[in-house]
Image 1 (spheres, rainbow, N blue to C red):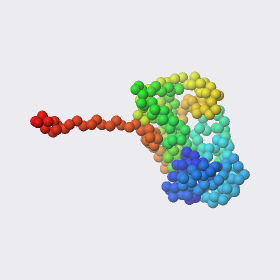
Image 2: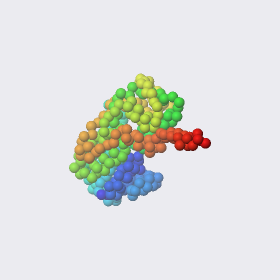
Image 3: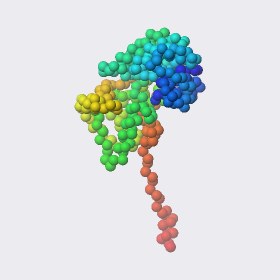
Image 4: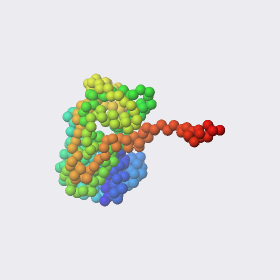
Length: 319
């Protein structure tokens, strides 16, 4: 199968292109810049120069690619979905898989939720043979924007002579269900290959939820960090983060991320398991693999040098 991919130069894109190649598919990947073109080429895809902001040109570009299916990995939170759907319909690409996010279920009044839900509405009403996948928080390698930073912090702290005291806003009792990036990529390709999944939306998460405090403990263990979790009130942390957002040009942390810790993020994966043969790895397995990939796995101390053998000692005593 020949697949047209948007977002192929991104974090998930690398894994999807690799999985597509492993399954014998060929890919054409949209590239907004020469740098993105080099990235997707290195990942085994043919680059197609395109800018999602130029929606009017997408139809002709999609048609020129001559593909059998569309895999949209580009975020649905930036308002490009209408143009992408229109281009797919106009070019005759009737089979399409779109990656959304379980973040659309949040009760928080965030702008991106409305944009993503509008995008999903456009997809559902497009006439395409669509499938929507909603992954939870994706982790698994450098660039995941979530747990790779946490692992790096924990790895630095493991050298300390005392356990790291790690503040846990809200106490860490809410549920999380992270999903490894390779498992998401497998689900994407399974959806493309299975036409019977058309018209369905699937939650794609880890095998089971765990509380946030346990996520921290397992992550600390993966890099050999001794950590003591200290529950702290959530409200002051949110207030401080809002102040940080106002004074920082490029904040690496946002109040919304703390607010999301007050929500349970647990999702059933039975439908994906049944229709996509989806069988994700455990969080403990996945985070250990990520720590190893980042070079953060603790190095075991070398065993002590063996002393002289009893036979040597006997010879010395008789000398």
